[in-house]
Image (tube, rainbow over all chains, first blue to last red; front, side, top):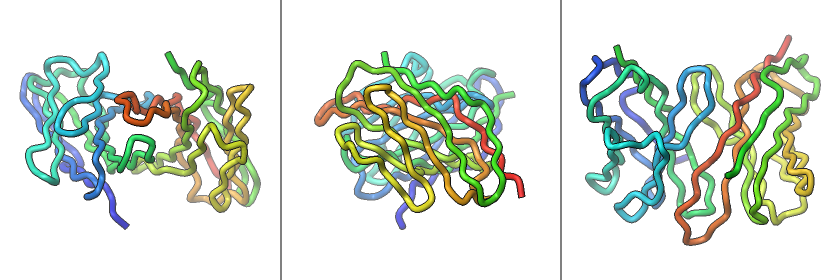
Length: 113
Length: 118
């Protein structure tokens, strides 16, 4: 069964460094999402992406964040200058259509020191 | 703005017994989707069950079923014949139904941690 994959599973970085989190959505899906979950808290929406552009973003998704689909398979989240409060689990999700269920990847645990 | 509330931070159930997790939501929309996701210790988000608001029939998936009360804006999850592998955090989530629209983000509740006792 196709699944969403994410790399790396765990990334440790120093405050102020740039990180890129990578996702490979399910191949015939057209809608892509990033969510994050700070430890012990609920899952929060960051951004949705369709047709090579951002379709919606939350207040969390400020100028330090960007997303890109550099080729036909990868979907990336870049944090330009990480802060301590960016430490969280980041989930990528994809869906075939708007009403379709969103399928989540296993997540990337980001630790900012 | 839509909100999702899970009032039970933790629940416990004996193996083979039945447990019900509660979820309420607030929306002014008439058409939407509701979901239950399971998050085991590995922290992967796994879809358990999905309900379309326009369907009156409650969704079922094997041992998992929902009680969807649209007027009360309630969406509870019933797990029958609980197994040790059911132990996880369970999140209720809401999403608008908007064909061709951009607003299809999931809005999550705070979760219920379910323990299964052998």
